[in-house]
Image 1 (cartoon, rainbow, N blue to C red):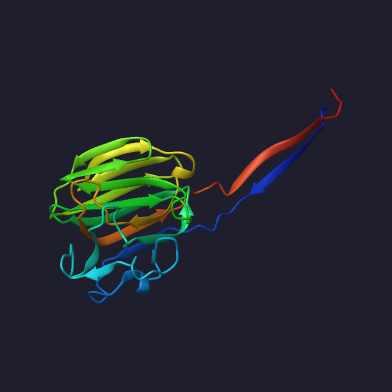
Image 2: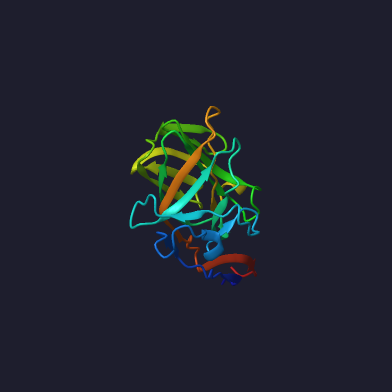
Length: 237
């Protein structure tokens, strides 16, 4: 008779991660008030409040309701307005959907980027320039270009599977680009909105952002894993 002694290691792992959702239509703010000064979800670049960097709530244009967020500059290098929609943490796994509407004034430009960490400027996951009726997407390895009519509202949507590193950008429900990211560039901590016009012949940047939403669904890890870590055979026939 054969006898076996088998040691089983039962690994129990539980992650207390929950789906998260955020939406902002700016209707609860007064026109000409500053967003980072009032909202716990918005902040100025580099985490310190700076009135010059804060963006105004505006009732000049709106995708829905009466208000939106307005960013403008006439400087060659943009700014000083520079605000970040902070996601609260840097997400590196799970699925995210990010959506907002943009209206770029005619003969002007706009810009935004995704920050991969809470240390602003350490890792830019992607960036978008909007000018000359075009949108230029830079995923930090490849440039993509598509049409983007000025003085019209456009829906910008990202479907992101951080676990697989798969990112897809859609404009007005049409796919613009799909690409794969790895490492620190495959994480998201917030969106930076900065008014700059990359067209060297025009320093004017003026755009509105409205109906911002993002949602996060965590990756579901197995709650129980079994592994044989030791097995002994003790004689017999």
